[in-house]
Image (cartoon, rainbow, N blue to C red; front, side):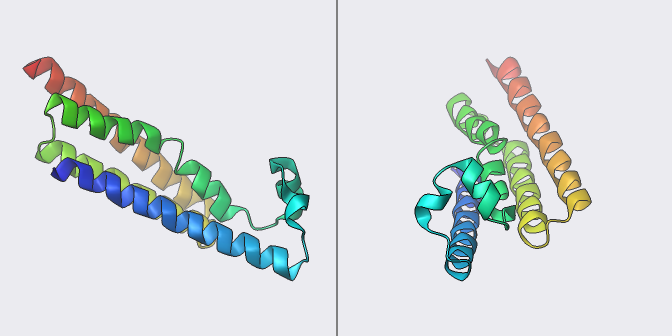
Length: 138
């Protein structure tokens, strides 16, 4: 089903960002001689680990995208996986790739925010398209 491919792509992005996050954390922990127990809580991590961009992005990829994954499953269940839905799904993934790039590769706030807002608008459009399709076709 073509409608699920964007979901797999976003999952791949999430795992890629997770790998970057842990690579950066482990490198800093080695460099600064930080014991694993010293960063056992989020408060401790925030105090000791200075590069949080990838970790912040990883959390972002588990927040708004939740609605995206549910939309894909809704599309499958409702038989609404047509061209418009697939195009919107890929557009959302593209905005998340941009958002991750802006956040993990320099943390540029304005373009990151704009890509986030664009993604939210695409996701809202995706849900609107799904609701319209279900309303029309039952």
